[in-house]
Length: 72
Image 1 (cartoon, rainbow, N blue to C red):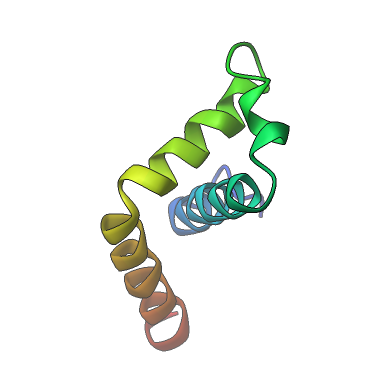
Image 2 (cartoon, one colour):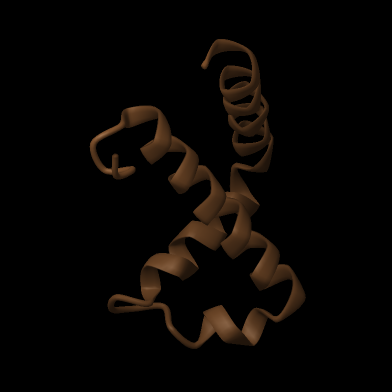
C-alpha cells in the first residue's frame, strides 16, 4: 500500500523528510534558504524543524526504528 494509507509509513516518511532536509541544509544552506515560500518552502520548514527540535526528532527516529525492527 501507499504511505498515505498506512499511518506508520506516513510517520516514517515525514521523519525521513525532516532529517534529510536538515542534513541538506547543514551541507549546503543556500539550496533551501532561497526557497522560503511556496511549495518548495515545505523543505525549508522541515529543515527548520529538524534543526530546532533535533532532540525530539532524534527521539522519534529511535522510537520509529524500534517500532519497525521489533514490532512490525
